[in-house]
Image (tube, rainbow, N blue to C red):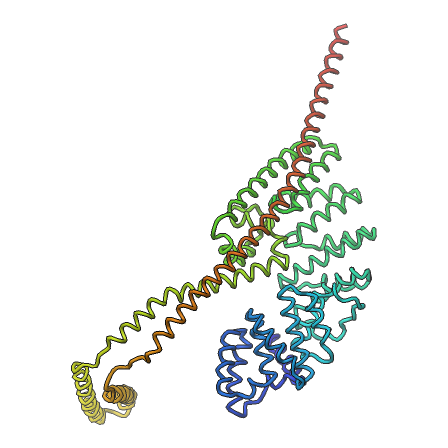
Length: 574
């Protein structure tokens, strides 16, 4: 029901825009039907099929496809399909003209900005967004503000309120991301009250979307940090207690919660949060800090035995962590790891609670070390490019394997002959057809002697036989008119060979790009592993010093106790 309401809502909004005719139009001509086949695949997000349909109806001289709006839709689909350079050429060509409507021009500028952002050219992207003047189609309005919020660092003007977007709040989940990004930008501009207000709106989410629940946790953590900076421990505490203990931001929240409790001298409340973190994977930075902090907290509380125990366990955990890093380095040194990493990326990131349990499989051991790296735009873009290259390589290898089959087919076509035996087979087929017609006539006569009910049952069978006979008759007629088998044009073999040569050239080019990108991925991951290694070595050194200090303290206490006992015994003897 909600989906239906949303569809009606957007249909009403589209009806008042300049691009409405491209998306919602009554079917009155054959061109509308042709365009409908493009829109069907477009709304299914099957952009490849939609682009194939688009090129087909362009060949049919469809005026809708050739219009500015049609070209704009094609460019948007190509961008969504990942063909950035070709779509950029389409938008640039559109913008070079002077006959565009305001909404088509603004849409082209938006898509062009999206392309620049896709290429990590954010300054150019922001410049393109600044060329948007006037109205945008409603279906791009939220995406436009979301992209603008991502590029807010380049905006030196005060950020305007998004009151005109509030009507879309319940329809578009991106609205929450816009508010979050807006809050971050307001923090950069030192507009703390506005930032807190927008973060509160994001933190108020209580739906079922895992993605938005994680964003709400992140907003609560941000609010807690802001209140802690202002010295408002009470409000910070409230937001910290509302963050889920399982989730992407639970690690940071639990550690912040523990520090807030320590600052307010609620030591008994800090320990449970630290214990939860202490059981999680050593690859997580917050867990590494927790192991040192928990032991220190016990030491400050006078529980020396517990402090010593946790320092010993911390050193063992750090040794395991460093061992896992070495194992991870061995993994990424293997030849096919970048390919497997890309292919299994969704499965790796989607492992249930990998942030909260100790992994056991190689790739699961590998993943927690690169949580921060995966979330970076540059690394995700590199993986995307590498993924596209692997897909191209697989397709080219498939066509390379098929090339021998193509040549075999060509060889076999040269050997085709139309012999007398085939003519005899056609005559035999014609005789069989006549025999079937005679039997069909006998069956019709026989059915007349049956009851009306039984006759009705036979009618369907007879109609089916008629259809089969007509099909057979048509095929016999076609084959009877054939004087010789089909022979391919002389240039056909050369054309096929040219395509095979292009496949070889494209495969070499693709392989060279892969060879350039794979080392970059390896270096990025290696750099991230080195950060973990340095941090764990630092914390392990602290734990070892604390362990040694506690051992010395314990030994000194024992020596002192022994000395006092001897003194007491000597005094008693005297």
